[in-house]
Length: 342
Image (cartoon, rainbow, N blue to C red; front, side):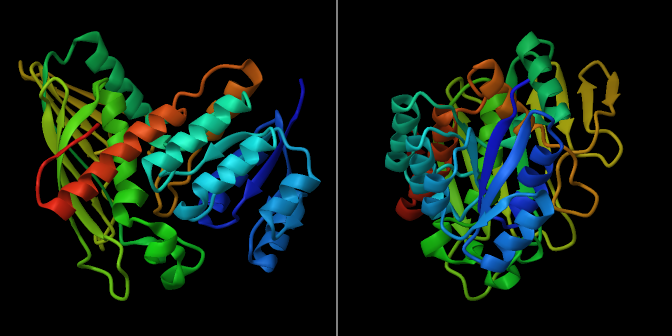
C-alpha cells in the first residue's frame, strides 16, 4: 500500500490533540513536515513525529512534495493557506470554519476543482457514533416528522484549550473573525444539517460578548433556526459554560424524542411516545475535557477519500453551507432582523 506524505501547517492545540496523533496512528500515512511561526513549537513537534520543521508554510510547500496538508491555523488564514496548498497539488483538510466569508469559501472550492484535489472541512461531529445513529433513525422514518430541536456546544473558553491560553488568537478579531460561533456554533450548524437532512432557510441570532474581557469577538450566542420544511429550534454556542462542557442535542419528533450526548452513561437515548425507552452506549464524544480525546475519525475519512478517490463527506460545498448559517446569524444580529439564508 502506498504511503501518503502529510504536512501539518499550524502546530497548536487542534493539531496536537487531533490531527498529529490521528495521522501518526494511521498506517497509510507519514507526517513528513510540520510548520509553525513559533520555531520552538515547530521543532518540538517535528522531533516528536520524526518530521522536518518549518516556520514558513510557503517555504515548506515549495521545498517538500506532499500528498496532503492539514491546515490548523487561525481562521483568517484558512482560505489563503488552503488555496496555496491546493495550487501546489495537495489534497487539503482544513479546520473549521472553512473561511471568513462566502467569497473565500468559493475561492477554496474553485482551487480544489481547478487542481483536481480534495478539499475537506474538519467537522468531526458528523462522525460521532450517536450522531450517525440518530441520523439513520431520522432518515428511516422511525422518528416520524421532526418538529423541533435544541443543540448546544459550550465550554469555559479557549484559554483552557489553546496552547497560547489567554493570549490566544481566538480572542483577536483580526485573526479569529468570529468567536464562539465560529469555534463551536459552526460545528452544530453542520451537525443539524447532517441530522435533519435538509438546509436552513432563516435565522435569528443573538450574539454577545459578555463573559470574556479584553476581546471583541463573541463568547455567547443563541440562534433560532428554521429549516426548509419548517423545523424550528435553537442553537447555542458559548465560552461561558464555566463548570463543564455541554455538547448535547435534542431532537423532538412525531414518534420519539432523541437525546444525543445528554446523559453521562448513554450517548443516545430514544424516548418513544408509547412510553418505550431505548438507551445506546456508543462511545464518548470528542471533548476538550480530560480523557475525551478519542479518535474523531476525521483523519481516517480524509485519508480513505484520497486512497479510494471518493468525495469527502464534508467537502468544500458542505463546509460553505454550514459557514453560511453562522454568517447569516451575524447579519441577523447586526440588522436586528430575521435573516434569509441564501
